[in-house]
Image (cartoon, rainbow, N blue to C red; front, side):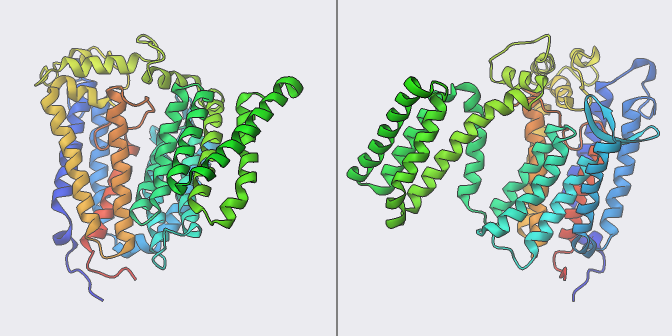
Length: 474
């Protein structure tokens, strides 16, 4: 078994340089975001930039510690780490400190820790460990379901806090399952669910249901290419639907149009089941099941939106979709952020010269909205540099993931890419108003010890695995 003599010679220097540049640039932007002329010292521990300096030093120590640990530790103890972090997610619901309506933090004296930030690398390790076992086949449901459960468990526990932003990030790991061979039908179905969610908010449910049925019938025609069978199927559905509608109108008077259509589809499926079975028309069955699932999803979205999402979350979605304009209320953050970024122009107003930043027009401008400080003081040029750094890091990590010899290291590498990309895309997207404000940090830039430490551990575990890619984990 081959062992490396010096892991520092094998570790990826480019990723480390990008990491160091980002945390330093983030620190200077935090300084600009909360700049106080009376307390202008960079190391003033009473200010956020002083505290961030401590978090940065601690993250560097963590990075070194993560790298010097034997790479096999992460392989053999992946499930233990995952289990311990899931326990913390449960305990924080019981003993956690509530901040801004979310019970997401443990408080130790003046130090607060957010378990969900650390659970991300734990989930990535567990997913890598599971998919590494006997080279799991991602085309089989008995493999996909446990892999999905590994992802969904921390997402649900985080949603209970409630922290919907961090919860959504876990679902990015489904991109890893797609990379490892999960059927594109499942992956595309997930993307379509997201699109269908927003369409449900934009279009009346009844009209959307009719549109889905029309699309389904069109797809069935492409699948069977037989006019007679197609017309028989359409005729069966229309006959049952008209019958159900007349019964509801003159007898029941309480079912409702949407339920009439759904029941008609179920009965039509039963009537058409013989053809599907005898002809082994798997494509027709898939289209039918997808149609039923889509209609159930459409009708559940309205309930979820109005009964599960909190009022401020509904407001943010409505503002993003253009249903409401509330520049002085719920939409204030995004409106001021867009003003800040737009006012920066091509080259920015100059470091510490941002008026929107200086006069604190943007709430959370050192945490979730740190990018508006970049846009205002560094302008389009500076923003482009920061975005380019993230893209370069992500592409570099994809390159590193592809050169791994073990499934464990490759899966973990793509998990890192998925998590960082989701944070990067959503954070900048919400700052410029193209996604709802869900409150997640910009990796390595936003103020906060938990997020910085969590991202540091997430990244450097992979760099440690990559440094020993020529070794055998087992």
